[in-house]
Amino acid sequence: MLEIYKKPYDPLLPVVCFDETNRQLIGEKTAPIPAAPGNPEKYDYEYVRNGVVDIFMMFEPLAAKRYTTVTDTRTRIDFAHQLFDLSEKYYPHAEKIILVLDNLNTHSLASLYEAYEPAEARRLAERFEIHYTPKHASWLNMAEIEIGVMSRQCLDRRIPTKDEMTTHLHSWTCLRNASCFTVHWHFSTLDARIKLNSLYPKFVTC
Image 1 (cartoon, one colour):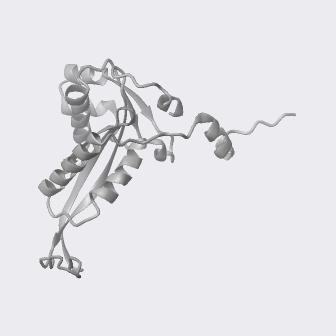
Image 2 (cartoon, rainbow, N blue to C red; image 1 turned 120 degrees about the vertical axis):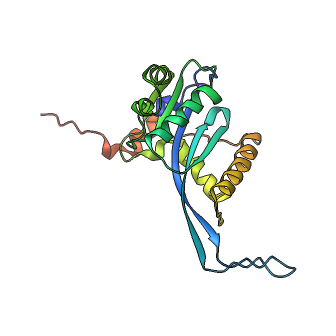
Image 3 (cartoon, rainbow, N blue to C red; image 1 turned 180 degrees about the vertical axis):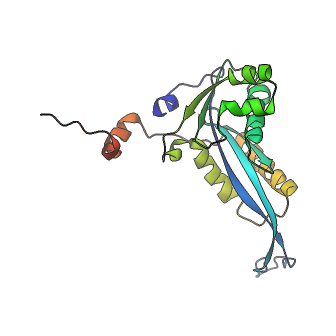
């Protein structure tokens, strides 16, 4: 995984980190009192639960680009549709898309066969080179860092509907892309051998 992050930028072989999260849709039970001179905006502590949505994050660090999608569910078919968008909408000219994923059960190229006809599923599957983060090491996926930024900058408020969530995320995504914000990864294989030494197998000499 760490060697993948050392690859130089190549638009024909983009390295894309993929992850997802969910958020509860929360509405106001009582209308907030607008801010006034000397007084901040006031919210009632009571709120209305409007269900949960899933947010897909696709992040290419070297190009400082990310793409976000809000869905009602996070099934294999939802995952397959995100792969289709990566292949056909965002990277149609790439020779191969190098995809970094964690080990969630839906994160498999086999999901494509649940959403598309076999020939199309195979065509799409051949567009990807998959690299999974090790077990208990999903923090190696840079998409998790980007989701953290998204949560602080865009989702730190009550958002009542899926449409409003989509609008907020679209604005945040466009602004962050236009500003060329990215993640500068410094953790190397050498660092891992030092800091994670206890996880490496030990050899005993006789």
